[in-house]
Image (tube, rainbow, N blue to C red; front, side, top):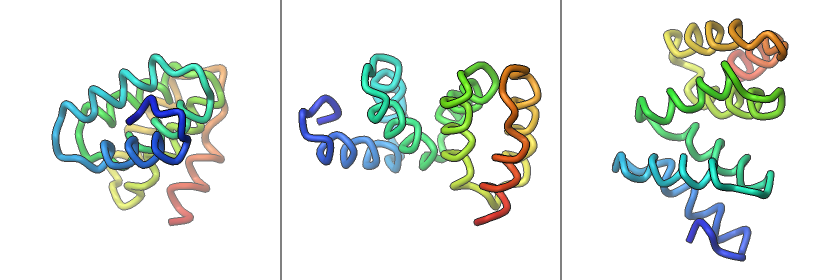
Length: 116
């Protein structure tokens, strides 16, 4: 379903996997994001990973914050902000952002983590 030609079907499948308690769902999502060609699929996958409470999903997104392009790093911060209540996660996001010298993320982090 992730590779459906229908954008709605792909998005629905990705969001369902992101909310799954099954760790293999996270692996499937990460694989889909890594193989994605279309930016909309990457954004959908990142957003879906942000819904997850699995540590592997958080670690993947923190890796994007730490090493990703400006667009990917911002998308990962926004996805992680679903868990705005988690002060430890916020600290991890700030730490990862500090390690990505090519991207200024402080304003984005402040906006998305505080606005919720």
